[in-house]
Amino acid sequence: MPSRSFVVALVLLVVCAPLAAQNAFTWSYRVELRGDYRHSDDERFVVGFLPFKGLNIAMQTPDPGSHVELNVASLQLDFGYGDWFAARALVHGQALDRRNPTGTDRQTDADELWLRFGVKPEILDRPSGTSFFLQAGKFPKMERQPVRLLESYGLAATSFNRFEDVQVMGGGSVGRNVYWRLVGANGNPLFFRDSNALAGDNGTTMVIPPVRKFNTGFPILYNAEAEGLFFKTDHVQFGQGLGYRWQREDQTMGFDAIVFHYRRTLADREPITGTFYGGDLDLINTVELPGHPEIANPLPIHGNTKEEYGSRLYGEWRNATLTAQYTHQNVAGLGREGWEVETGYRIPLRLGFVESIQPAVRASAIDNHFVGDPLKYPAPSVWWDWRKYDGGVRVGLKHGLDVTAEYTTHQIKNPRIPLHRKETIITVRWRS
Image 1: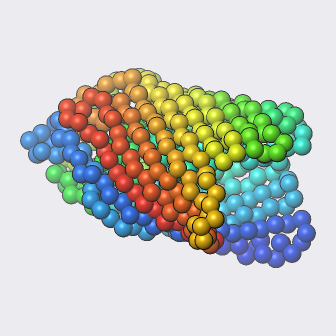
Image 2 (image 1 turned 90 degrees about the vertical axis):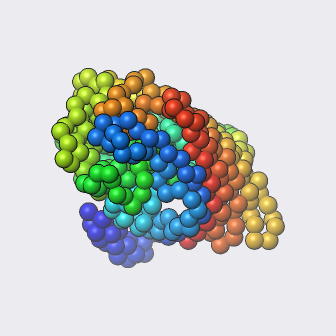
């Protein structure tokens, strides 16, 4: 699958160049490189999972200590014909923070690969009047945060809308301000990962006690990255959205608000690259380990429906931005909800190589309305209640460079011992 992504990107590059000579056709490309310094506090929580009894096996920070990493290298190709057609291919290599399991997941993938017909204004832009569009492929969910101020993610974004989905979306505007969306999608598989930079390794070894490249982390349930690039007709996820956007004529103030809803039937098992754990129902209704009998009913599930609804608000006032989002999720009877608020202010500077500085803060939370059996499930962190606080500053430099320094800490309810999950990350990014 990764090789197909790069082939498609290469084909678009070859095709777009000659077409751009025609007046109505446009094309562009962007290369991005990101490297970071990361320090993660080492924390452990010994689990009571019966197959591990007496082995002192614990959930633990995926990769504790200080590390310097090449996080991602990506290529984005955009192609358009006037206002009525657009296409994009965004492929990456490495992407350490996207991989799950961190040590065994694929290292190349297509983040976006889509075609669109019709007018679809972005962020606060508004069409001249009533409009319509149809978009198909792999692309972000309609409620995802449009502008990110930090390199890390909050708990709500990680859990519900961080990763793109394979989908067909129809939508448009009624007048200039009101807009609507209808979606049919594969639905991101339900899986679990750590809430900090690295997902951790779960289900990557057949040996007990486990021997892994990375530790398990402290997993939370989340909508994982799509495993394929093609639309599937089984377990289709249907979604609806209704939004309103407004912007002052001088573009110094505006906001975009949307309410949304998704519903689908969970698959019995969704394969996840690099792990013997399956996604969807397989993750929450049984636990299978090599050499041990199957463990049934570790979590209080009933039914096979996955449903989400919520809202997201994005606003700008001069150089200030604010994003607030809320999502309620029900997964086979397991109720949970998350919220997140992020704000920042960009200060233009003229200090030689330094062009701007943008401090930002974020608070986020996940509340789980269920409790599992710690003797039957290897990751009790999935039913803990979480609070995550992030703060940082992004320094914009010349020649497409910027540096983001940020710090993360948590408040976690229910564990027997205090856990703070502290992490410091300094990211250097270059964009062409």
